[in-house]
Length: 206
Image (tube, rainbow, N blue to C red; front, side):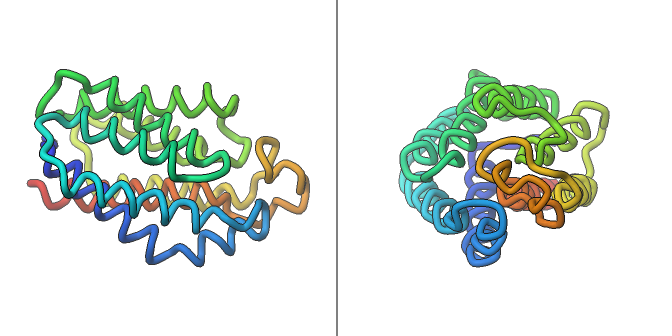
């Protein structure tokens, strides 16, 4: 596994495609356990990300990820902007000075991103948040010597679907208490699209 600047930009483009395609679905998820604006916010944020990264000339993966973070923080409303923005900012710092990035560097970036999400959101696993998708994906990268694209997708998808069974204890969804059970967490769903897009890039880069 070896990812260059062009691969990271492709990752962001594919993520944006999935977010735009599923904007209404993400909004529907958020209507059940949130403020009903997650799909709109995420679609606006990633649309702006792609507009930016497609028009600038980047020489490092870290710079692409840093710009992504800044745009998400400024364009995505609610808690999602700071959380996803922090994830990409920590990721950019974790791979700074490494180009292209191999699996070890990518794993370090993911670990740093997860730590940032947990710190910013004061969340841990089992609380029905995006952490419940990021954590198992990070663990997969840590324990796997040869990452398989389909396994990345499967790990993220299974983790997303498992949030349905969890009662929310963090964020807006926690106000719904037991009523949050039976619904997929919107942030977990967005995170799934991010990792599904990543798996497609990994599959194509060989």
